[in-house]
Image (cartoon, rainbow, N blue to C red; front, side):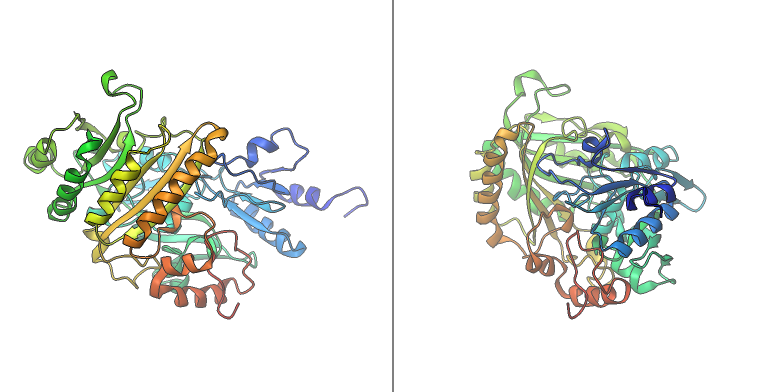
Length: 464
């Protein structure tokens, strides 16, 4: 290193990708994440082009005692893809996908969004379980578990993960699967970004609908019907064929097409359904969900699976203010329904909402210790989000979500889906992994004994 060369210039010279520092014009754009409530100022952002770039970044940061944050899609609830004074390993340029239609697999680079994956797989009439927004990053969602529209039929995203490429804390590279570094592979399936930087994933795909065309969409009810709808839904859902899944929420009907103008801005209870079975059986399977109660809108229709996955992307673009609280629930109790009614009536902004996502069917048949994702005994993953474009409303949406969660939490199963958590402390992390936490800590001790990767829902090495 010459007298005129800074350490970051040394890293920049070693990368195929781009290194962005605070003096660069694109710095503010590069450090922004999906949740605009997060305002972190990293020391540098490395937009990596390949696995070699990732390894160079890890070694560089380790050699200089720098914090490391890893960013995929940038959707993380707590904004943990960036951090003050850290070197951000930005994977967003790693965007290739490779579908093998004969073997029903897709290999996905870690910077892909689920929109990228759906674009590649639905063209072949297939999909792999993912989440509920196409703009969500593949890496973060997968490593946390992956609850989505296909979970009742095909399990979580991690239940369909076949292999992963990982850069470890010492900068070395391993390929993991059920037969290679099996302990690490177990931990990656729900244990978050604690064990290394995953640079690619290989997933099992499944044929869905009719050549990738499913039947889905919302059924909306007046907010006053919430108690009746929730009681019906909690009993109905476990009895449905696994080709049909639906999450329930409290929301404000968006003032936009395709919703009828007379419903714009109205608070509602809604269920978004997704049927992936044979269309010849659809009328029979969907009869009960089309006709129950007095719906304001029945929006079920044929569409590519990718269209349902991306249906809410325009409503929730990057740059909104978000405050998240979450829990798992073994049941939707009458006490909980009363609380939902109270806070549904108080929805503070048009974007603020509450969702309950089923953990049922194929997801619940996987043993709790088969992957790091521990909540397998049925029920729902719940999330309360205060959301608004205006920073002036951040206190209002935060307080509503906190109050709602405080009242609802006693009805929960204890922990939460880590992808929905903000910075909530070590005890919440332990509660979210239940009996798997100690085993995760042991794997952490083997692969990251110094806790290099700790800007996450952190699992500390044993004894730390």
